[in-house]
Length: 204
Image (cartoon, rainbow, N blue to C red; front, side, top):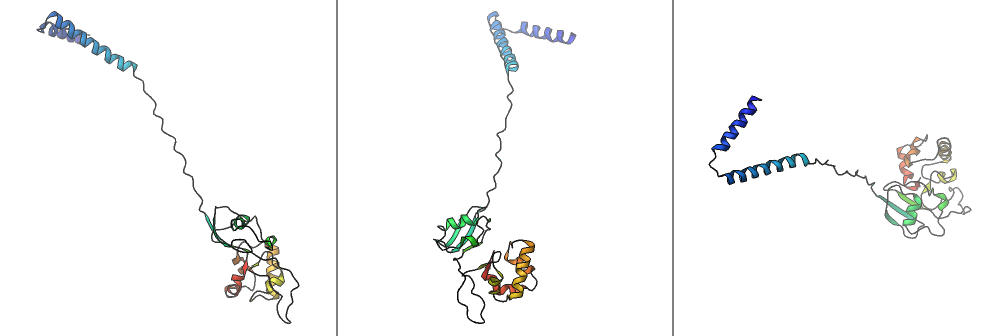
């Protein structure tokens, strides 16, 4: 309290010692009072605004497109780009649709296709074609679907005889459809060398 009184006394003495006229002192006091009042107004009326960060949109992962080769009994065979998750039916539609004699029943139209895959639409095969004596049964035109092929179809492949053909059918019956051509290597009697003989003539 004494210190505050001393400060006030010094200010009063300083004010008295100023060589200002009464008018000048009043003007100076009015300016000082206005500045003090303005400072207090700014201090007590200021508002702190909350800074809200803009929401960051999560990055969306875009699945890569699929490059598919569609051939066989379709209107416009060729290589097409399809979105990820496309199915066999989408690939056939991209190629202009199937021809009238296309064997669509031999294909799983709902199967999800993979990048780099070839979709072969076979021609409808009718049994009863003449077979020369001692020759194997006539095989359908185009790659053989190993998930739908009969023992006779499989027997027509190079390196596959009646015994191995029956093993393939038995393996497929016990384990379900083949998901890749290389699954045939799991069948007894089929090694890498034999598989290479007919790999280009089969499909899933």
